[in-house]
Length: 124
Image (cartoon, rainbow, N blue to C red; front, side, top):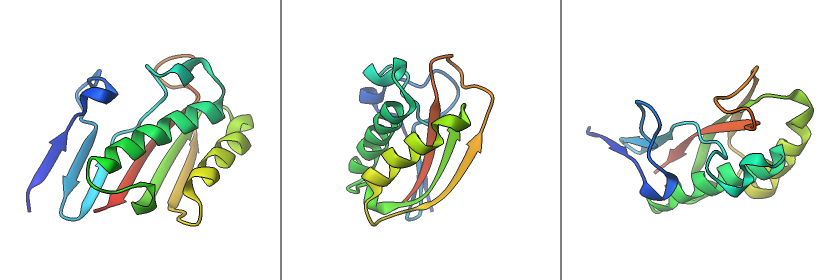
């Protein structure tokens, strides 16, 4: 089965040796997305989470899907105190289509204002 790698101009070009999304068989994998380059980059964790979910929804839409097709997310957060705000933003977007999830507390992301990064796996 072929592997397809895609970048999307609307999301900005990757800053390193990675691609926005990879598809294989009936699965779509995304790189980790942050609010970097969005108006939410200097905002709180909830706003940043919503901006990331918008990016993930865009990638899914490019494949004829939406966030209902999420299978798994991994959420990286820099401050445990932000977890309730992040969970609230996630729950509001998931509705009843809750994916499998891991949440990992890390010391920092690549830019000091970033509070959350999310990578995802979608069913195609």
